[in-house]
Each structure stands twice: as structure tokens, then as C-alpha cells.
Length: 343
Image (cartoon, rainbow, N blue to C red; front, side, top):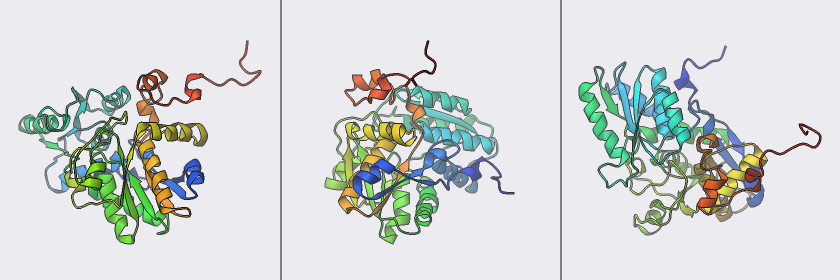
């Protein structure tokens, strides 16, 4: 018999899926790493698992202990689910601007949710800094202790991709991968996968949403941002510990207007219901494919399910308010089949 001994063992080893339309547009083979098939339905399960294992190995997390983290949602969901399977409690600090679907899932996963106003990192009440203070406070009162996961500056996050995502891509493509593209939240996915693939000659690209600062940093050396994006969980304004020592071969700045049509087409034409960060990634993969030229193989990350953003990403009123493209099928309602269910 073949089975996973627990939920943690089911994290990773996700398949590659060919993105048909993006491949046809570019003459390249564009593959998506289906990270939405992880148990917590996102790429962040990998970081959650490695952060927890690292804390256990260092003796920082005891049975019955509490994991505290500041997160836009997916890392928190991963920590809550993986943590629960190992006997840990979870407290998650989240910006109140994040989607209701992710907040509901965090609660469903058993996490205690603390919502705070969205604030820049320099603000002492930024959700990350707030979570650090909360972890320190709980460590003094919880009978089994508490740790701060610190996904942004805990390099166990990056190691999950050095040891897992990168080698998986290399093995799945038989070493015939020419490029890898990812956006950045904490930096673990992009930098960790790059550490595994760049030594093999794979070109690695950053896909940065508007409102983030890394595109300008890697192009011109300035942490400067402009514009905004509706994407959640990505976009960074500083060099986290997970990004230290990493340099992309290419850097792209992707507006929502460019990314969203890929999300809508993937759902309508290829059956893939994915979140906004995946749209940024696929748009970046298309740009890299055009820079490298036809005949190359490009891999990117399909980060999470789109149903976590249904109230925003697939809400015509929300999209129109933001002046963003809205597919006709999203506003026309259910398609009817002639002669079926008609009065």
C-alpha cells in the first residue's frame, strides 16, 4: 500500500500542468507548478511545514505549543493545518483588508484570528511587527510556550524550496527547463527555487505587481514603488532575509490589467480556477518566454485556488470599481442549454 502517514507528508510533489493558451501565444512550453494541490491549497504549505519542523528540531516548539504569525492568509492556513496535524495551536495576525474567504478558512482551520488595520512595514502596528510582539507576550503565558514563525526573515521558508520545489521542477522536466518565474511575498519561493535552479543555468525572473518595490530595486537599486494591485499575499517593499544573496536574471513589473485576463482565460478555457498572484506569475512567464524566444520551457507557480478571492477577483462590481477588465461570462450569469431547464 502507498499512503501518506499524515498531512505533512502530503505537502509537495505537486504536478506540472501545461498552460495551453500561454504556450500557444509564445511558441514555448509554459508549465504551471500546481501548488494549489497542496493540502492547504497553496504554495505556502511548503514554508509552513519547514518552519514548524525547524522550530521542533531546534527545541523551540514543544507539544501543545502555539505558533504565531503575521500573514496575508495562505501561510497562516498552512501553519494552522500542518500545525494541527502535529498537535500545535495557531494564532494568526492578518490585515483586515484581506479577503473574507481566507479569514473564514483560517477560522475553519482552527486558528485564532487577530485582525489589524493595514499599515506599511515601517509602522510599528504593521501586521508582521504586531505578530512578533504578540508571540513574545504569549511565550510568557502559554504553558507549552509560543514561537513566532517569522516567514519573511526565517530562512527555513526558503529552504523548503531549495530542497523541494526546485529539485522537483528539475526532475519533472528531466532537466530541460530554461526559465523559472515567480512573484514575491516573503521571497522564499523565488529565492529558494532560484538557489536550486540557477546553478543549472536556468534563467530566473521576478514578476512584481504594481505597488511593490523589488522591480525597481533589481533594475535600478532603489526600493521604490508606484501604483497598486488587487493581488493579495505578494508585493514586497524590503529585502527580506529570504531574499538576501538572490539576484534575478530578469525582472518584470506586471499591472493587474495585464495579469487578470490570464486568470479569467485559465478558468474559462482550461478549467483552472486560480488566484490573482498566479495571474502575475503567468504574465511574467509569458514575458520571459518572449525574451528567451520560441522553443524554450518556462515554469511558474500556480499559487492557490481562486475561490479564496471570489468576493473580489470574480466580483464584477468590485472589478468595475477598480477600473479592471471584467470578462463577459462573469456578468452574463449561468449559461443555459437550449431546451434544458426552461419553462
